[in-house]
View 1 (cartoon, rainbow, N blue to C red):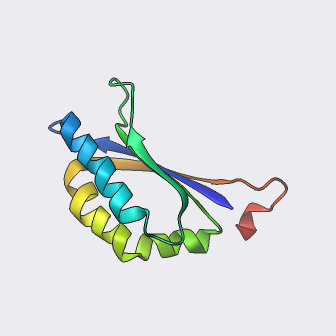
View 2 (view 1 turned 180 degrees about the horizontal axis):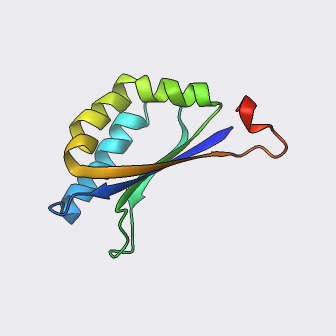
Length: 105
């Protein structure tokens, strides 16, 4: 099992309403993706932090994460929301099963 976390820098013109809309859209588009488990999205509580928005989810493998990235729901979210409201992102991928060799994740 791998855990995926993506942190997004939101454009300076983004408002609190824009962040709320991003959260709503992410939950509408991404909760339907079968490969993603324990999906979460939200805003940063620290206004000084450079990353204002995040998404995270668990996947059975890296292959399932790749399938998630090709899913029409994710592509829709990427095109309609992320491309217009964010300026950059940082992604992390963690193995969550103790003792499992990461090359088999």
